[in-house]
Length: 224
Image 1: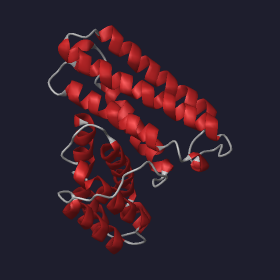
Image 2: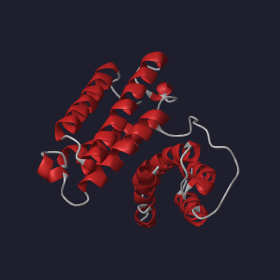
Image 3: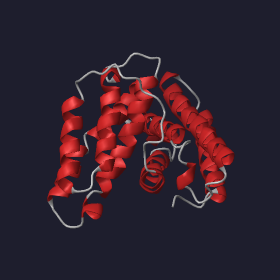
């Protein structure tokens, strides 16, 4: 839960910058690209946080975050998007008893084209060797990125219609499940390093994650 909430905070903190992008004007689709990327991740993280059995300070607002994130994705212009962002920022300390479930509420393309590559790139950059990984803060970054990847994988299971092979639902879900499990293993072995865990175990988990990415790319050439 701690890693998911930390990732939520990370992406949530980008909303002000995303609003600045909108304020610059120009084509809405271009200006809102980063906002839509971040909103998709926030929706999935809110879903995961809301369903977790673990206690967390963000759980009360999870349903509100999902609702506000959907409003951002549905925005047709800068004013509507900005209003939805402001609502999400205002609701962060709110509370809702509405149930939170996995639902097909996100856009697959920005997740696979922007979010997954950026997270995996940072993980690999910080994992060049054990010394680099154990530098102050790097384990937290890697473990958090891996947790976010697991959430993206779990939340993408319902998005097969947006892939290059919409008829391969079972195969897509299997790929997502493997990617989720491999991401969680990276998270687990990264955290274990803080308590004397073996870097070799972490490296093996990272190699498995990279292999899972390759298999999925071979089977699905990308989102539509």
